[in-house]
Length: 279
Ligand SMILES: C[S@@+](CC[C@H](N)C(=O)[O-])C[C@H]1O[C@@H](n2cnc3c(N)ncnc32)[C@H](O)[C@@H]1O
Ligand code: SF4
Ligand code: SF4
Image (tube, rainbow, N blue to C red):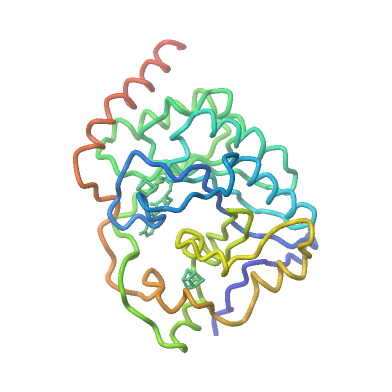
């Protein structure tokens, strides 16, 4: 039998509790309008309770560090994490100070390279570009640009053709919901920190189901986090979780208009200019 998913793992080799992949959204804004966006753009709730998103995230990271929980990979997402150059720069600078974070990954649509300053590239370990554009030239330029200015970055070009269906009114019975929860891909890869709470998956965070999250504050104990991430029973949201129901997939990254085509020339020109100007 397949092992059930644990949101918090224990590694015998280094005697460490670890969240494999923790996601944070530094903005809910995005240039694109992908149909079935897994983050509910353009209806994503604000990931912060105050107007200082970065200090809220830093606060949550501090509590995980206080509880001796390591983060295998911290995913910086949005919306689109490059939407605001200054917020991304501050986020990378602040998050890179945590020694319990093993790797920092930025996940972007790759259409606004001008919003990742060269100084901040140093803080990124992995850059994942979700390819929604139809341009081999832009993919190649990204590779050449990083080879030249940030060769330490692992570049991953993500070309999903199909996505999980995110919207729908299907309801699972209790035994199906329990099975989806036990083997949930999102619990393994998308533990989420937002609005000063830990969420076992990004879906319940983006659905604003804050009561299904776990507040992270001075009083939070290790056992509370462990019991939350490794609980045995499914939560209410699992019953409506279309992405885990194994339904027919949808086409990835579909836009309502030609906005990607309009953004492409700027992205290409920026990378070309940087490469030519500093050769
Ligand atoms: C929500 S996006 C946020 C970051 C950035 N805007 C982007 O699109 O790369 C993060 C990742 O989720 C994936 N994603 C979005 N909607 C999805 C869906 N319905 N099913 C599966 N993956 C999805 C995207 O391909 C992307 O790699
Ligand atoms: S680029 Fe698409 S998938 Fe990414 S946040 Fe924007 S709308 Fe969602
Ligand atoms: S709501 Fe869906 S994604 Fe979240 S834990 Fe339940 S089955 Fe997994």
